[in-house]
Length: 117
Image 1 (spheres, helix red, strand yellow):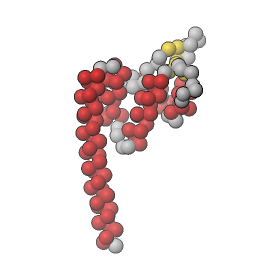
Image 2: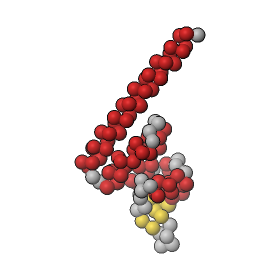
Image 3: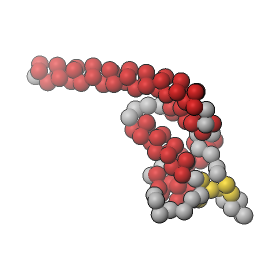
Image 4: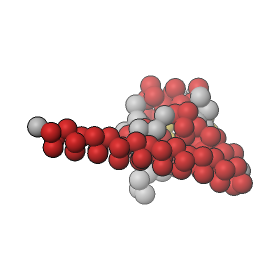
């Protein structure tokens, strides 16, 4: 990522992050990722911030969080609103804690299945 000259076209952004062009376009529609600039012929260009946001989205989704769970954090991050980022982050941490507790309970149930057979 260090040797890449930003801003980049959407295809390069997809290659860097592993997120499909189609999905990036969906995130554009949802205002989760923003275009930094455009070329003379109108191609959208994205900066390093788009990479960070897409990596955050991807990791969050892999961890089982929904777009609705993480959307407030991304929107406040993009708006550079530090007070609201903190509030949104705390709400997301609560969701993560609940998910962690649910996974722990699920793991305990799996252990009980193994012990009974």
